[in-house]
Length: 192
Image 1: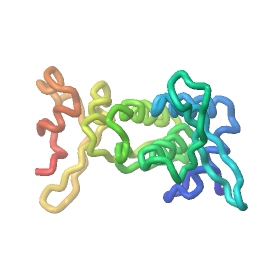
Image 2 (image 1 turned 90 degrees about the vertical axis):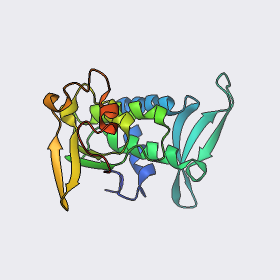
Image 3 (image 1 turned 180 degrees about the vertical axis):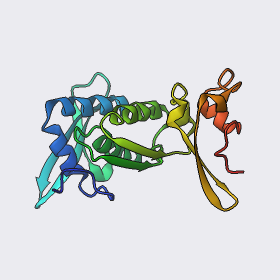
């Protein structure tokens, strides 16, 4: 069905979010994570206009304001739309058995990336995730679970994949978080 899971092009985002909001626990989680993204967002709403369904975010005009404005999806930033897509995938109560996400950090402010990692961790309890990233912030958030990181490198024209272990990190984690160790070349996965 069109609203079951997010399509690759996100063309059904409003349908997926609408279906997810039908469940009170999921609705509360969506709103909680949306408020972490922007504390002024108070509600996700949908409206049928001219035969098509439209997505809106309700935003308070100030932190202490009771006045709000509805912002149509067409006026939202790319980062906000990408975060809504991540919510549609990672907060889904019945995700598909495998979810692949390429560079979830794209278009997002670095401050929200720890929230994205939290969403990834929570979703990994319901589905298998494969996530690619170039973000040291996301890798940093995995410092306590380095075995969750698979380093991909091109060696002699072939891609090699290697799961990190504690032995790979001896001496580094005492001085760096995992993302810092990666940027300093401790375990590969760098451009050169």
